[in-house]
Image 1 (cartoon, rainbow, N blue to C red):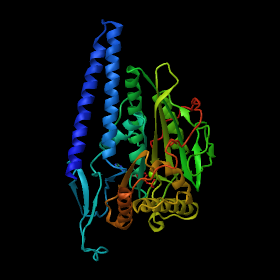
Image 2 (tube, helix red, strand yellow):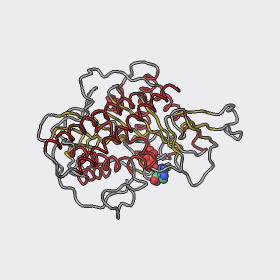
Image 3 (cartoon, protein in one colour):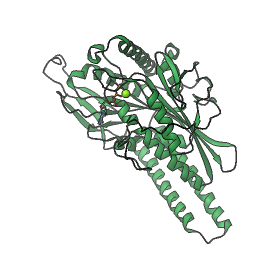
Image 4 (spheres, rainbow, N blue to C red):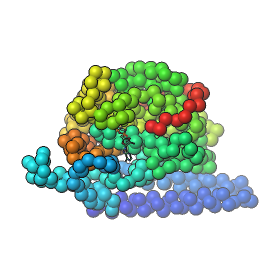
Length: 436
Ligand SMILES: Nc1ncnc2c1ncn2[C@@H]1O[C@H](COP(=O)(O)OP(=O)(O)OP(=O)(O)O)[C@@H](O)[C@H]1O
Ligand SMILES: [Mg+2]
């Protein structure tokens, strides 16, 4: 572990130095208004070389960090009896990474004799904000811009903060353009970061295009949440890719991005249960594809794919208080999550998982294979009354952490889950944005 820490630190240090050099070169380039075209060309070439070296070092850091990465977030709660727990830093950095649930002598934990211990790459405390979470995971987004595939998925019991972490939008009515607010979730921050990167790359002579679409998995069906209104088109999926569809939308500006997400969020299924007033009743996926070309050329030099997955939460019927259609929804959600857990158990044991048994695992398959960086964000509640369910999700996260990645069936195939010629975004009616 010590060797890994030193190696990781060394590479990160080199990466920081290169980033610094690159920034200096960029500044130099901006200053030179009166020098010859030849000199500008020389500086631009040097800058591009630095960019290539930065990408190579960055990629090395990501490889050292492992196949499946897991971070855990403990949500804040304002009432109810809490579990006693302790946080410690891990070996790789000084931030919390070890979680110990301390033995409790009161019922129903009397039988537990030893504390439950868990270790993840990072554990976020209830006091930490969405901004803190993003500062740890933004490197996944950077990797996608650098031409890699990545998947970030939020996992956990219903009501633990998955949708809040993924999609929260602070101060919907009075937002200022172009800035991230403290409690903004991953999705709005990804938007800011990607468009900032787009501008930076433009200065280096590249052209970056972005396209995206939203899906939900509801009632054992994969549905494309299209920009043209209420239509929820079911699309078929085979074992490797989502079949071609025309849902990929070109996103030229932040406004296009917001419109896509707004339609997705409006059309996905939410419903009230006893665990959560606004519970996700489907698994929701935002898929973003980046393509980088030299300015004026049609050849793609790098392409990346980012899947942002907000899973529906596992729920125990007696706690969720669901009946009728909601009970059915809950059953479908639990069944698909159980299948996903089985996939993780198989991957941890080095077995070949049965991806095809469920639409969720079939869909996520390519996000779990070797050519994709995968991050699980496990959400938990510190409420004592939920400990049994929490313990189960912590165990799933441990399985994910020890899972090994399998090669994709054809190493030359991209992890493309939506392949189509992307279309321009149709106009979306100007309604106030929903909070989540
Ligand atoms: N870290 C947090 N800080 C502030 N509020 C939070 C936090 N986490 C969750 N909440 C609040 O808790 C409630 C439930 O969160 P959320 O809907 O994100 O849960 P979920 O895990 O997506 O549940 P489900 O599986 O039912 O969809 C929301 O009102 C949300 O704003
Ligand atoms: Mg949710």
